[in-house]
Image (tube, rainbow, N blue to C red; front, side, top):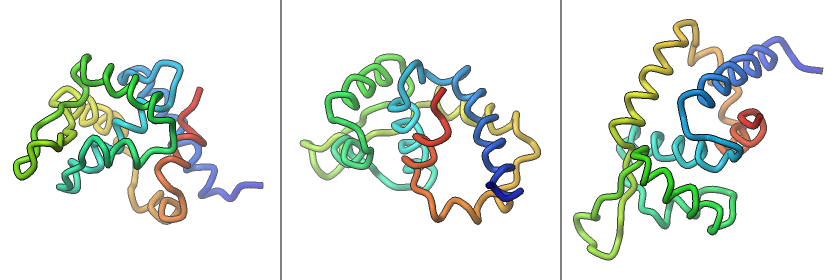
Length: 136
């Protein structure tokens, strides 16, 4: 059914799920988690992402995304900044709160090896990983 590598990966994601649910504002929807992960990914890789780009990068309705997006801003998980070259455009950034929570979460997984899991990840999109494994 599953290879040993796939089972280890599923266990890793399940462990991450348990911790993320405790520390991040996931509630009953996977949308906030996807928004937070997409925002962290952009920040970590030095990419600017606009609100419009973020909304179009996730496989959910705009209305659903908007509701969770506003809540994440209000609760201080993500921040909106002005685009330096276009006053009409707003950029999404990970807040200090999100970065610190993420760093603490990573510290709680000392045995996680990126090399062990990276061979599976290229064939999966972020949405597939999150929707497939990060739901209660």
